[in-house]
Image (cartoon, rainbow, N blue to C red):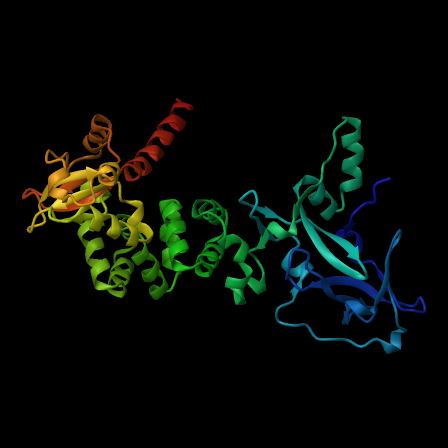
Length: 425
């Protein structure tokens, strides 16, 4: 017969007896040291008959009895010595039960209804958290009745458990004081997954998670969130931190966020940003969002015609971060920054290393103007099968590039909204 797991709901409020069998009180809470894959319970909080809290070390526990649930201590009542809590310890009932946590394996936010433990050589270790209907009914004291109803309809109430090793708490006092350590699991996820998780949290929780990430990851995460979420998070952050993250983003993405902020806040952030990055963003803010100028990024990889292929490849290898993600083509410009040619990365790699860009570039370039509308930009991508389109002004100067993902990010929400509307017409 399979042994039932040891659950917090079973232990909570159970009798705590001393070595002589005398009642010390009832279990109020368990204290966890949240380190490792299976973190240990380090203390227990006992509510005495005098309604006082008695915090005891777990070493004081001699054994746990399951039926009926009881905790037996190894000392007489008068010999028990209370101990203080450590700052890094977590009170489970207060910090986890009925709180939101992140399931980093499935990239979703869940609410904890119960906790599962295992006994290992005198230690009590947290194994998993439980969500789902069964855990909720147990938490509310209605599990037995639900079992009877489910059996009538031949339905199984399955337990929904998530291993602690993939759980990230987001609503604890510990997360407020030790964000970087607490959100270590979350930081390992892809920014797009972090963005999905953030959107399920409250504004203050979102800001806390974003503050825990390094600036590069925070910038990528912010880029992946919905516009209204971006604006709310930036407004809740300190100006210095928000400016640092915006500097790490593509200028067009930073401009989109600033355009959704109150004018005073946007101006404050622009003044806090580094001058060069701020100037790029300011230039983009002068264009309408659904034009090439509003969609473009100013970080185009452009070089002069006399560059050797070998030198260009060397430069490409040194490019890092967000700039590298926009390099689909090499743009060739003259001394006045006018676009005079273009070649793909494939053409560059296959070329003789001793050749110059001017010898192998395509002189007949496809480009759009800053004021070109979204529809024409999209048609240009489709007609010429491009991954990026250069944006040039009336004098032929290269102002930036529009990448295919910039267009998709604007088009897809429109398509989804149209499809959703059709369902109700």
